[in-house]
Image (tube, rainbow, N blue to C red; front, side, top):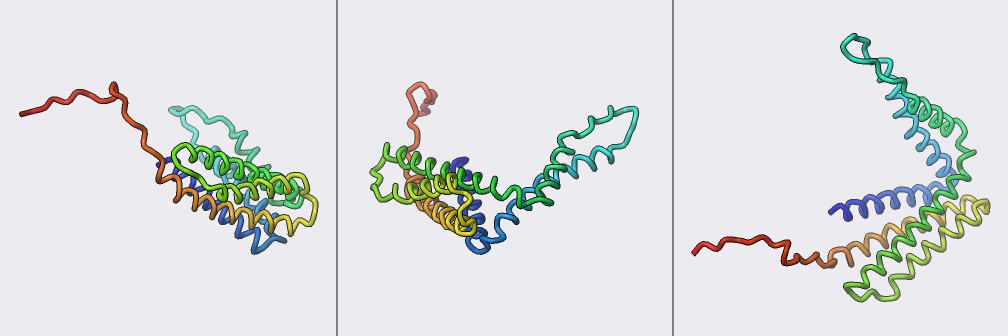
Length: 190
């Protein structure tokens, strides 16, 4: 069940990021960086407000100053104020995600071969995803909008491919068999 949830979360994130990159490639990078900035900013603000809102009393020791919260707040603010600086870093990050996604799918398909036949055609899409990740890593400065659209389409293809693979192979995974020592003695009542 845990594997299913992680697969579905990966599929959902890939779909959302892929749609954003395809529909708004020119603004996608900036919005993704700003969203990451907000994701760092909010916990920082919460921890600092929590520190100052903590009532001083003799019964409870004073909490430590939230240095991590200040760091999170400053980094989030930097991402929000200067998103252009981080766009190039984001290209490398998205290329790495595609690369790892392609590798993970190829590995999952090779594991599925242990309990059933996997046609060679199932390796085409993960190989293309892997190739798109390599291209995004080694040519991030070429037409960024085109690169984001390619990455977005690749992420959409990855999400659909992962979903198809999950439905096709994960449900057929054999259940582990119990060994003789795992089975407890059962008293038979006649």
